[in-house]
Image 1: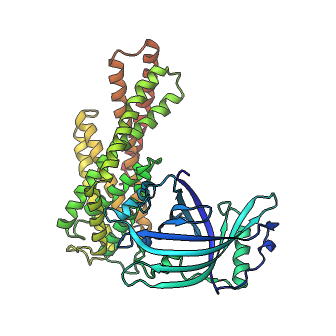
Image 2 (image 1 turned 135 degrees about the vertical axis):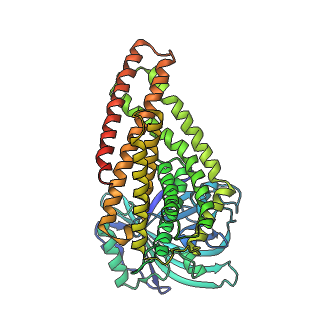
Image 3 (image 1 turned 60 degrees about the horizontal axis):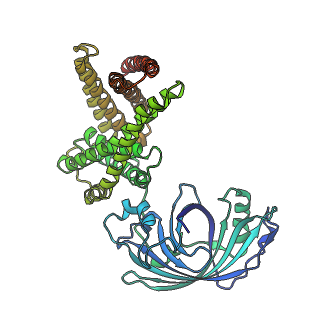
Length: 498
């Protein structure tokens, strides 16, 4: 079968071997059950030597037996009690022992250049009962498992245990059934599962990744490292989505790069600048590569929005959108090449190392709030200086246009470095970030209209359009001019609050 993904919602319990399961037909919405069916399942689990997958609550296995024999990748879904499961059958997979690319791609930002090796062998005798709903549709599966597991890690050991699994078959939408099953199974011999998965129990303790958070009296170093960890996690989370060109993924990964750079620039004396400069340069390069694809995405969206209310010919639509689509597709391929390079993986390793062992700068022990106040004031002065320079320039001149872009970048830096203070929960920081965002957004909108009007002007001068299309092009240009003036007005209003 081809690769497929589904959300798995299940309950798991430890139980004494041979313990009799309750009659699950008493559960709400269940009117019958199939006769129990027994399978022999044999699975080999794969991970890196560092257990990068297990540490992020991810399991990768090759399993024979049962109705879903093949390769499976299970990842957190963001929904409590649910996991995303990607499956690929043996008919679609490479030779035995070789992990399919479809399973590697979603986790390569974690495994990087490290080799995937067998880390556990698990054999399960599974007895499955399928529960049926009122319409004759399967609603859940109940599995009674007798498990034998051998850790393949150095010093690994052999274990045997029994467990129950109750899995919803409708994506977990019937919460009443799930809650009732949880209560029934706990009351009839089920105990809290000692591990989240068979792999976790087989290999024992793993270096589980902990969500970054601040203590009660954070230093500047605490705040900066926590924020770096948050955006590092965002970078990792959006990596697999960029690889499949998911909607908005390029934008969000690029934002993560820029936020990381803003932390280095906004708090330059909290970390050792010698160590962070190289990281900042590498993140700048990655953001630029992603930016080529993102800029094309933005332009395509603008063009589609402008054309939607116009009676444009197929020729004009093609002139406006085809070139940008080609640019986007080429840029995405370039991004994928960069994201499969040793240089990219080395960048991720360096960020991890920085979080694990941050090199303190001279202001590392400063109070977190004091560090944020200093950063805000420094960035505000930088913006005001740029605004003074703008006032001395001829309005609408190329230099004036470029200076607006400088102000936008400095407002973005103010916003991102102030956003770092969000864990402190102080209202005044949120207000500063909100104003900076308004300035950044307004100038971004203005810049989009300026770039688009230049494109429209070049297209009009090409002589390739009919008179009817030229008329439509003029209407579009007029709308862009109005949008640009509105954006400038929004900027001037917001700038007063900086």
